[in-house]
Amino acid sequence: MTAITTSNSTKVNASHARCRLMRPVCPIFAQWTTPKKAARLPPMKWRIGSVPHLNARPLIYGIQQEVALCAPARLADELYRHGFDLGLAPVAEVLRHDQYDVINGIAVTSHGAVRSVFLLHRAPLDKISTVALDPASRSSSLLLRVLLEQRYGLKPEFVLRTRGDSPTDYEAALVFGDEAISYAAAHRQTGLDLGAAWTEWTGLPFVYAVWAVQRGIANGELSAMLHRAKTDGLTHLEEVIQNSPEGTPELRRDYLTKHIRYDLGDAEKAGLKRFQQCLCELKLAQPHELRFVD
Image (tube, helix red, strand yellow):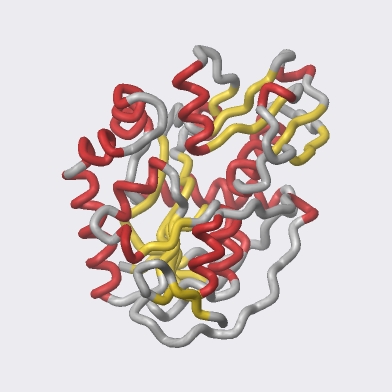
């Protein structure tokens, strides 16, 4: 794989560079294609990827200079191709492909309203005929489909949002991540909060991202580094809040302290298992046993 020279003369592999460009990736649901396996890259210590969103920053605190930032769907594809050794990965990738170990004790989760993943809709929920999805987030799209079909008994048509379109250009649109946080800062109404809808339905937390490690790579040194980053990030959470651009400091503080959680314990694993079961029932994932490592 081609090496790319950055302005500070450091060389990074091409998959890292692609991720920093954050090009949109699609498709979703039954239209998904499985990426071809890429050749192994030259050996490095660890090649680490993460999503670039506010809720991920506390988990990469102190190691952010070693982490390539990718839109969620791009990160998932690069992980699948072995472009990364590990990534703070969207949960859909772990549930779709049985090639990862999951680091115990660390995740991006909510137990109730999440405020960064919601369905904006003009008509009443049961009157919606078309929903626009963001191709950058497969996990959020899958969660929305599960909720609409299995909780509410709805089967709208799903379309992809056109790049540059506002979510308000559509009858209904999925909004996630930093766009959702910015939207919430400017509007009182944010539609159906998917975190709240999931927990009200199941009584369980929802897990959005985990540290997914290529099977066999995880070891004590790697796990200790990730747990230390989490501890340091939560210790310096106010610094993360003050130095982030999304919304206002008050909104960021409320979001990171009241809505997002970072533990992966028994309740979160039960939520993961329930989501996997839902996806399998809709034939959107193949059943396999998740492997958690310390």
